[in-house]
Length: 256
Ligand code: NAD
Image (cartoon, rainbow, N blue to C red; front, side, top):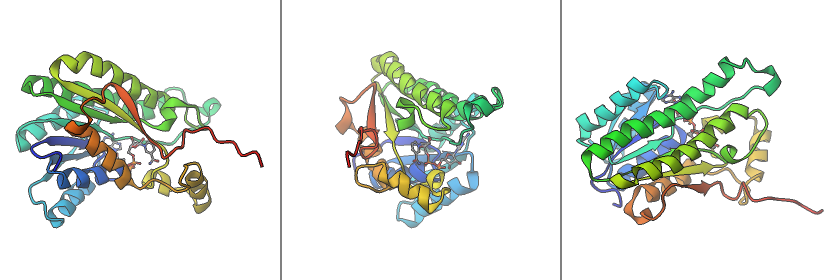
């Protein structure tokens, strides 16, 4: 029960890493607002939580994180339903790139950056304001990616947006420390969620081989780390990146 008495907002909570984190947080005693652009799937996750034996521990709300007014409403909804906001997990994101020279420079840039970059920025501002007003601190966790620290095929805009998430995290930690608010970014590698599961078995096997245990990460394994980061046990982790990539970013070279 490391999150007993905490209220958390989880964006992208209807699927993948976000959904697994909703389940982990309620098991740790938190109340969770499941916020997603897909309201029906967010409501399904709330129903799963009820069935798992935690009635009243989760509520659903629809949000498009790329619209600041909706992110403000999401924060207000958490306060209305659960009375406060202690943790936000800025996790909603989209992937999918186009070769650089084939970009429609406005559309292909905007599509990713609006969600993966602006959405995190809006979450930090809106939840940060609420946490500062409450005066009892808080934790802001945001999902970057290994791609935020390296170049990769078809990831020109995705990498830039995910790098911005790391930069936002450092600056937010610096600016919000006086309010007792921490900020941490995580960098997943290859996680078995719909983003990865859409690919062929062959490509999934290639992705699995990129990690040191030779397998895709289970979303629950990311959720375990996020729960730790949301808890007071991680109170000295601030303004930094926590790698959750199962060794993806280790330089690997086979000599034979
Ligand atoms: P997912 O597709 O299972 O979940 C993403 C969720 O975000 C979905 O429920 C979707 O409806 C929601 N969403 C999309 N756009 C939104 C918007 N504008 N407003 C609100 N919600 C929106 O994918 P996932 O793998 O769980 O991804 C979660 C995060 O992890 C993303 O930020 C992704 O970039 C990041 N990530 C994933 C991997 C991986 O291998 N799966 C690796 C590195 C980083």
